[in-house]
Structures are given as structure tokens and as C-alpha cells.
Amino acid sequence: MSGFAKPLKIALGLAVIAGLIIVPMNFNRYGLFILSQWAVMSIAAMGLNLTLGYAGQVSLAQGAFVGIGAYAAAIMTTHGWPLPAAIVVAIMLSFAVGWVLGYPALRVQHHYLAFVTLAFSTLAFLVFRNESWLTGGIYGISNIPRPHFFGIATNKPLPFYYVCLGSLAIVSLAVWWLIRSPWGRAFMALRENPLRAQSLGVDTRRYTLMAFAIGSALGGVAGALYAPLTQYIDPVPFNLSLSLDLLMMVIVGGAGFYFGPFLGAMIAVLLPEWLRFTEGYYLMIYAVAVMGLLIWSPTGILGILDRYLAERRTKAASALRAVAKSRLETAQ
Amino acid sequence: MSNLFDLLVAGLATGAIYALVAVGFTLLWQTSQTINFAQGEFVMLPAFLMLAAMHAGAPFWLAIILGILLSMILLGLAFKLLLVDPMMRHGVLPLAIATMALAIGIKESVKQFFSAEASPFPSIVPTGDISILGHAVSLQSIGVLVVAIVAVFGLTALLNRTSLGHQMQAAAQNPTVARIIGVPVERMILLTFLINAFLVALASLLITPIYLAKFSSGEVLGQAAFIAAIVGGFNQVRGAIAGGLLIGVLDNLAAAYVSTQYRAAVPMIFLIAVILFRPQGLMGRAEERTV
Image (cartoon, rainbow over all chains, first blue to last red; front, side, top):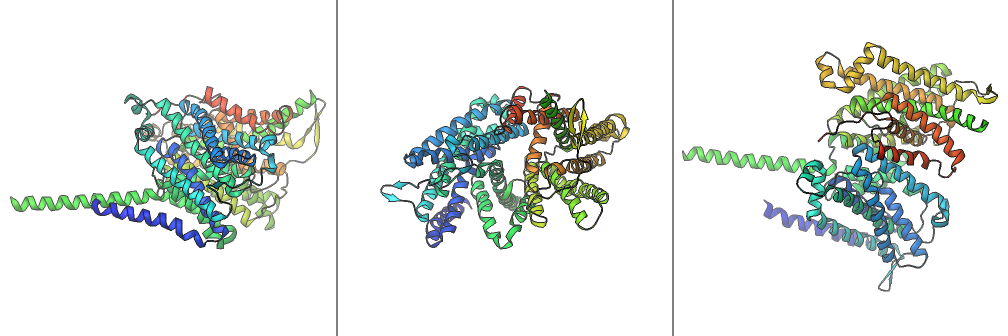
């Protein structure tokens, strides 16, 4: 079974990647913008999936980190710095702030942590809006340049889509490696049972802070791509509802599943576009769909798949057992 | 000094409304571990139900009664049966997310079926000022404060003085034991949902004349009520009341003395400080830690 499933999985993966590269080539401007947005939001949701899905720490501040990254990139690139340098600064900045935000997580859990991070989200929004000497206040920052790579300008939508897609690929590989490393296992131990993790010698303090810091850093990366993508930022997109949206993406896709954020971001970014024919009703349909999904499967879309596969495996195992039993009986 | 007095009265009036909303929030948490992220939208909706009834030709008093009844059916009964009950066994977080989706749903429905514009809403209290200790105080503030205080005292009397209230508290504190001694726990939980729906409808009636009926007004209110509930103590009705009044006053004082730009930051910083140094809230009991 698994000998057949693995090449199938690889082939499927390659087909999706090839599709993501080739199909958009004849998309229009708007289609490319939406796809780029999906890539950016997937990165942010992946960060939150590390914090929430793997390490079990509820955060309602991921949107604020996207904002921090976006402002860092916007301010630096409009002052002549190259985008890669801005991304590095965005990562370091959101990593440091995320680390500090992790400290409340050492003291409080669950809903209390949700509200601390919610408060942080609101504070960050107020800073974006009010510190106009730095952020442009409500007028925001416009004319954010898109980068040149090796002499190739990415001003056009297609090249910049490839920048976003490439960044998503790099982040995906890094996260893939991270969750398979001892770190990832320590995160999961933290999620399943913090006290037991501690008794097994996991430094829960350090890993809690790390889970927040790394998750936030990925939010910063997403923000640093978001700024040149839209080429104009103001505080509004980074208010609390972005954090709530990202949280929903992670839960709807499947928290703690590697592919959850990709699916969640796809639903949150693309579904409204597909439902555009319903005009003003799409957010209502979206809300009802999310509630229905969560009632049906609280572990998200991948949770359904997971359950289905587990069921099949149990059935296959019991079929094997039945065969073995009948063989034993005939032998006797 | 006169300024401070006016700020205190206005702060207590908004705080009393926050307290109403926060009390319902803590009741739901105590009886069914429900964190209702749509609580702000629950306050926004009844005003629109009342407006819809008035548009259909009902007089104001009838619209109020209809609005309260409808919100008890929709936000109490239907909310519990259709969303909370099926999700209860999945734990706190999926239910919290589902209520976020519900908040989006309510907001968008009102925007789509009613109006994206703010609508005026008649006041149950006459407008105008009266003089107290030489200060002009708006009748609206006084009215809001009085109605909210009566509602909250009524509720605490119900909880602490009547056998029904004792049964509700027993059901909240220890459902298993309550069931053994014969408390109909399920009915008590339903009752808290109905009480919450009544409280948000009342808050809606009190606050909408001041801030207009707008589909997005739930966000600010919901946040204020969460902060009030946590600051006061998540598991205490009296904590939610104290938290509500405190946040209302703090908010008004911050607007006057700190800066209008960072007005919203003051309650937030206060919230963070309380959570970090006294996570059970100013008046709350510490909950035992589950392993």
C-alpha cells in the first residue's frame, strides 16, 4: 500500500507545483493579484499554525505581525533599501516582538492568552495609525517599489507572483524541516501536555517563547511581501479582523496539519472570489460554511480527510486480521 | 473639578452597559464554557430587530417587546441549540472560532438586509439635562445607569436569593453534583442563554440611542465587554459588573486626560497588566489548573 502511495503523493505534489507555475501565465492582473495574496496569506497562516497548531498557544496577534513586517518593508524600500534586506529586518523585528509576546504565554493559557494577544493586536493598530512621522498615519505609505532580482524587474504582476510563490516554497521547506526536527517534536509535546513535556526534560519556557517568535517571524515575512504586492499600505488591513481571519484560516484548513494553512488561506482568499456572483451575500455564505464545517469537523477540512484515512486503515487492518484468523482456523 | 464629575457620570453610564454585556458573557462561560466572540454583535442585532418591527408599523413599546422576544429566541434558544450544543463536546477553541464566524454572519446579514448606514434610534429616556449638585447631567446618562443597575441587581437577587438562582449556580459550579442532587442542569444552562439574550437586548435598547444603530457597532462593544469581564474576573458576576464600571470610567477619563488618539490603548494596557499580575481578575477566584 504505502509503496504505491508514496510515488503517487510525489507525483501529485509535482503536478500542483507545476500547475502553480504554469497555469497563472495567462491569468489577468487581478487573478495574479489574488493568487499572490493566497501565497502571502499562506505564509502568515503557516506561522500561526506553528504557534497554535503545533505548539498549542492561542494567538490573536498574527495580523499585527503581518502589519509590522509590512511597515518595515514599506519604510525601508521607500528609503532605497533592497527588499531582501527589508525582509531580514522584518524577520528580526517580528521575531523579537513575538519573543516578548511569548512571555504572557508562560503565565496564562487559553482564553486569557487569546485576550492578551488580542490587546496587543489593538495596540499595534493604534501605533500604525497614530505614529504618522513613521507610518504615515491614516494616509499610509504609497509607491512601495517592487524589487529587482539579478537585473530582472518584478514590477509586472507575473514576475512578482513568482517572487511570492518562491518565498512560499522556501518558507514551506523551512517549516517542513522544522516540524520534523527535535524542535517540532518539542512543540508538539508542549501542545499535548505541557507538564509531561517538562518532566521529560523539554525546556517548556524556551520552546513556548520560540513557538511565538518563529510563528510571528513568518507573519513578518508575509507582511514584507504584502507591502510590495499592494504597493500601498495603511493601518486598516492590519486591524484585529486580519488576526481573526488568519486564526480562522488555520482552524478551517486544519490546525496542526502541515497542509492546513495552504487550504485555509485558499478558502479565505479564493472562496470570496468564487462566490462573487452572489454579490453581497458571500461573507454570509462564508460564515455559515465555516460554522457548518466546524460543527461537522472541528479539526478542519484536513481533519475530515484524516478521519477517513484512519477509518480505511482500521478497516484494512481488521480485514487482514479476519483473513489471518480464518487461516489459523483452517490450519487447525 | 466639574469636568471630572461629568466624566465620572458619563463613564459610569457607559460602564453600566458594558457591565450588562459582560455579565451575560461570564454567565455563558460559567455554565457552558462558551466564549462568545459574537457578544458585541448580539448587542447590535436587537436594535435592528426593533427598528424592523417599527418599520413594519409597530409602535415603539410593541417593537421593544417584539425585539426582546425575538432576540431571546434567536440569540438565546437558536444560538444554544444550533451552534453551542453540537460544538460543546469539541472543546473551547473550535466553539470560539465558530462564534467568530457567527459574528461575521450577523454583521453581514444586517448590512445586507437592513442598511450599511447608521440609523437613528428612539430613546426610552427623555433627552435633556437635570441639575445634580450644581452640575448639568444628561437624563440619558442617568436613565441608562438606573436601568442597568436595576437589571444587574435583579439578576444578582435572582441568583443569590431564589431557589432557581441557587440551582443555576449549582449547575454552573459543578454540573455532576448538581445533577445528582436533582438540579435540571440542562434547563438551567438554557436559562442562562435566555438571560444573556435578554441582557444584550436591554443593552442594545440603552446604548443604541446614544451611538446610533450601525452594523459594525458590535466590534467595539464586544471588545469592551470582554475586557470588562476579564478585568473583573471571568468567573464572577460581581466581577463583571465591577469590571464594566471600571472600564467605562477609565475609557472616559483616558479620552479626556491621556490623548484621544491613544484612548483605546489605556483599557488594553490595563487588561494586559491585570492578566499578567492577577490572571483570575480583580475580583475573581483562581481556577484550578487542569493537567
